[in-house]
Length: 52
Length: 204
Image 1 (cartoon, rainbow over the protein chains, first blue to last red):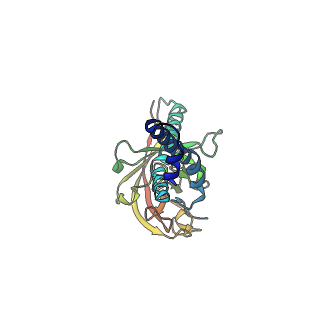
Image 2 (cartoon, each protein chain N blue to C red; image 1 turned 30 degrees about the horizontal axis):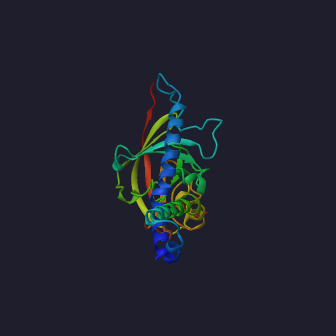
Image 3 (cartoon, rainbow over the protein chains, first blue to last red; image 1 turned 90 degrees about the vertical axis):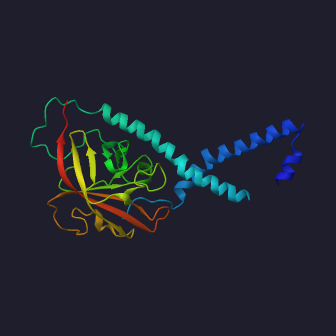
C-alpha cells in the first residue's frame, strides 16, 4: 500500500517526501479530531459511575 | 502494521486528547465558579448549614470545588451537576438527587479513572483519615475518608443516603466517591467513603 502511494506521488524526491509527510499529518489530524472523538463515546471505556 | 499504529494513536488520544478537553472545560468552570461567588463579609448565619444551589443552576454547571490534599496542592476540580457522559467528560459529577455538600445524607461523586484528565485516577491511594475538601458558594466542607470498597457495577446501594443500607434514614453527612476499577477496565467500581468533619464559613 505504502509502496504504491510512494510511487504514485509526483515530483522529485524532496517534493515527494514533503507530500508524504503532509499526507501523514492530515491523516493523523483527521483521526485525532474527527474519528476518535466520534468513536470514543461508543466504546465502553472507563465508565465512571455505577449503573442504575 | 497500520492497524497497530492507529490503535496506539487512539490510546494516545484517550490519555492526552480527552484530557486536554477536560482541562479546557475545567479552567472555564473553575473561573466561572469563582466569579459567581458571593462576597461575604461576615460568617454565615448559623442556620444555613448545607450548601444550596442558586436558582439559575442547571445540569453541567459547577456546584463546588473539590480538593484532596493527598493528591497535592494543585489538585482542584470543579464538580459539575450530573453523571452523564457529557458531564463526566468535563470533570467529576454529582449524582443528581443525592445530598448536597454538608447536607445530611450521601453526597455522591463520580469521576473518570483513566480518560478525560482522570480526576479520580488516584482514588485508590486515599487512606482513612485523609481530607476531602468541598468548597461551595456558602462554605467549605471538610470530609475525612472512612473506608473504601470495590463493588460490582450493579451494586448501587453504595449511593444510598446511608451507604450500603438503602431505605435507612440518614443521620450523618457522608461523601461517596466512585470511579471504575481496575484501571482501564469497566469490570468493577472503586468506592471511597468519607464523613463530614467540619464546616468552614466563607469570609470576605
